[in-house]
Amino acid sequence: ASPIYTHFTSPIRRYADVVVHRLLAAALQLQPLPDSARDMDALRECSDNLNKRHHSAQMAGRASVELHTLIFFKERSVVADARVSKVKANGLIVFVPKYGIEGPVFLGPRAGVQPAGRSNNTASGGEEGAYVLDEEAQTVTSRDGSASYKVFDKCAVRISVEEGVGHRRQLVLELVLRDELPDKEKVA
View: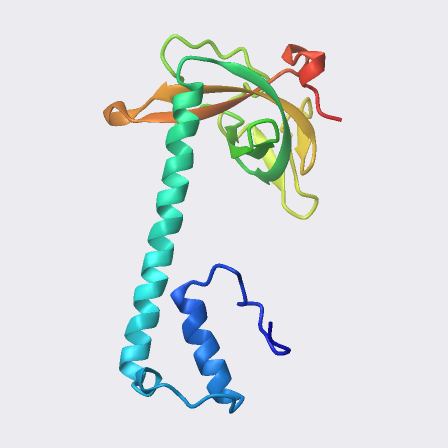
């Protein structure tokens, strides 16, 4: 253990942390500056490479989660409790605690297209432009005043997988009436 440390200190050190520690130790005059740190172009190139690889690892992790989520919901349609995390002019972003997923819920037809074989009997309904966003109040309200949603509101969503363009599957969240949500699924 060291009496001096930074937030980079970790039992599992990445090379980026090692580089920072070496530079920090040199700046505090605890150790001499390594020769590898004297070449600014090489240090910048190393930093760029580390950042690129870190970003790639994040993207791979997200893609893995997306793939496994699609596999899990592939053959099922589930109604789950959700919370509104963001409001937009054309819909909501909701978080589904039970499954740890967040995604968009459109308050009208997506790009003017209704999925084949699907009737529009959900709680979202409505036509394009039928909702008004109040950014200051963080609410979206139907023009006729019959429905209003704000950040942290409880709602229920149907989670399913649809095949989109080029046979690419995507997770779809649709707003449904909370009556469709079984009591045991409702989060306090």
